[in-house]
Image (cartoon, rainbow, N blue to C red; front, side, top):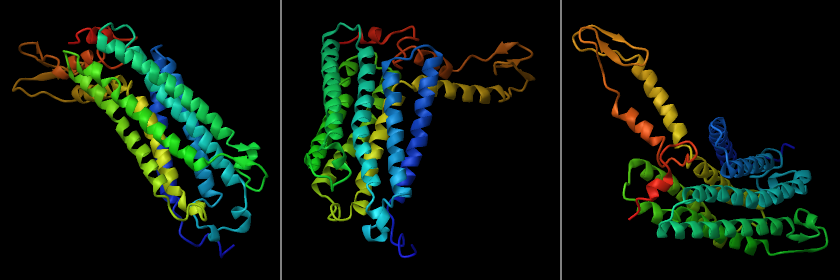
Length: 351
């Protein structure tokens, strides 16, 4: 065994990136689910996103397992014969391909459901059009990714030929299928990003909450950039992809994992601004509580963190940030069920 596993291994970046994204995405996903669950506002967008997160974590396991146990990332000649000839790595990446379609569809549908809630009752022409376009987008996503999942699952006849090439049978052209899937990923991602902008940018009162929400949507550009990068790599493949796939396929797989986890992160934080605000408010409140105020007169600290001047019993006014924080929780933070000012009222001010 000493003559094996002695060459370079390019799977280390894949392992490091996947583990980091798993931790970050897992924290955000669980935080979102528990926060919204504690307030009784869980909906289909949350369930779809958690389903996608579970599938993404399974894919992370497939990639890490292939890299740590089955020699993924080494050159073919650096692997012992039992690893080199094993069908297990191919089975793992077959499952990875199937799960990728299902996860991507679930994550994108989660965002589409959020849009459905935003445009649910608005009656202005632009919002009506946005609502119809969003339903069309949801139909495209559900139809394509469901069909694509079955195509990936049944890409060979018999099915196990997909990971055992010695089995007699036939398979689809997987390279062409991956290329088509790459284009669909780009189109649907760009559609998701651009779709709400026309309606929301026509709102008269463009307060900071609206701009923050639009900024969160724009984070999806990172996801789209990864999808474009993968398509470019399909047109300029590594020459060793066919003869030495264990070595040559790690970069495309790394980009694919970044693409799907960034998609989940973007879908998570669209509705998480209240969570971030709550944490920020707690931190600033704790700092304020223990921050003494010096005015040349004796001061005491009240339980709420306000300073009180003993000679005049004058309390300091709450900061502007606190009032804005209260407003943030009531406007375009996509917490439709828990706020007093609805998104529909904001959209009602459309030009």
